[in-house]
Image (cartoon, rainbow, N blue to C red; front, side, top):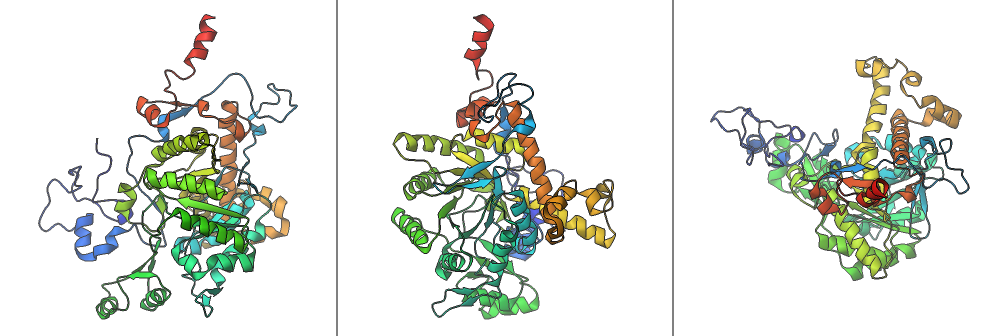
Length: 529
């Protein structure tokens, strides 16, 4: 079975001319001299490296579509006709108390100083990509009013046009970082938090010191990697002057904007954009532990880590180092991941897929615990979008996994809410929306609920944030239904026994019992005793 046909995809705005395509190469079975396009090979023959990336940059997010042999769809959730675990102590268990609306979906993470969230999901790192910057108010306020954590990603200070450095080349002023933190804080109320992520360049620029001293943030996140790619973060830059500025700030910018031939190609219109890249990190145990100590000395109450779909060796390193460092949350991002900008082929063809990576993580966590080490709170990321997927990840990783990190799944409601407001103002509401009404109070089912809660402040809440809140409300209800069906009325009572593997292959990878043997002995007791 072919898992991915290369050489053409909507993500790269390419397509095969022929309906008949060689599955391994992705080349048309009949390739014609004189073809007018437009497969990836055809387009890259004159646009070169541009074809590596999904686009157009700043207007889209992309998720790889390689169809892995096993994923979470190979698991199903067990349902039961008796019992109710996790109801408040003293509750008389019965049909009147064990209703799905009584399910508690709150979770928490942290080594000692815990952070609570209303639902067990939080945003992926929204960093220096244009789509994150342009939609920040929607994402930040939406996360805050939904009671979930928001991750401000890498390189935000480094690409800030208003960045000012001190004599030591450290951040002195970053209006963009200030805007991002203050936007979330304005509507934050007990649940969730905003944490800032750092890579190599951020560390060199003194981002940790800046956000600690100016904003008194409680949490900082180190980044080893992500699921979408195994190289540093990337954005595109549209002007020569901006490209040169970022190169002077210490970034890798390609093609090199200081070279005469590249300047000439840009002025001629051949080079339309430059790429800004971050550096690869180099992890050592000693260096990692020293950095954690340094960050705590700065004043951070919590330090978290995000790692990517690296080999099982790096996974083992992350678990052991985080245990010794008393890390507050380790987020593990599996392949293929989603992105604002990552090489398309790399997204599809590198890294350990999420399902396999979580199975390894559970196995390693058990081994670590048996050796006497405490396993830090864990979160899984990489391709999640709905309540069943989150339930399965929490159950498969129980008791170690506390939440799921979602990228595009939490960004889309922000886009939708923003665009509905725009369409109403322009008098261009599509039929798919207009069938629910013509005004914001009619269309958004949670609008009046938020208006009652926030009163006059409602006018400061952007509609993208309302979209995220409305989606989170649906997510919470859907999760409550799944949990009630498995007789779990608190996230802490979910276990691996609440799942069954539908294929023997999935059972072999995950250790979840195959459907034809799961709870077999109990069934025989009921049948024969």
